[in-house]
Image (cartoon, rainbow, N blue to C red; front, side, top):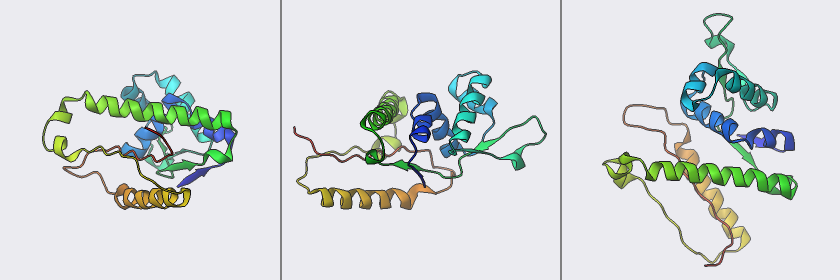
Length: 178
């Protein structure tokens, strides 16, 4: 897991297209800019620029062994997940990154709910949503978060095989009042 401590690296992640490129590389594995351009509807030159920004931040790297010739450029994520803590950054930087992360989570959730597959089996009964108000101390919330992360980690590196689709799992815990 890549632990981000540098504001410049967090800024590289805190861009909607770059976040999507990271998601695509995480889910689909190494790819060329042309493939990522088709997946995102962006121009290859734009994708190449954003890939270079991510590479300069140390979040992705070239995969030259996959190239069939010198013109092909493949990119991969060496770490499948990225993590950072709000207390490592100024409030302004952390808020901007959190806002983008939440926007991406809402975008993915909204996309799923508008997808006809959301109403068809077997995914309709497999997909889940859970929320609730609990009474926890900061230590208990941290313990719960670690336990949830362990469950997610248990499933994280399963290969893409028949019957498996990329699944987005979202978990958040924070103090709130109804």
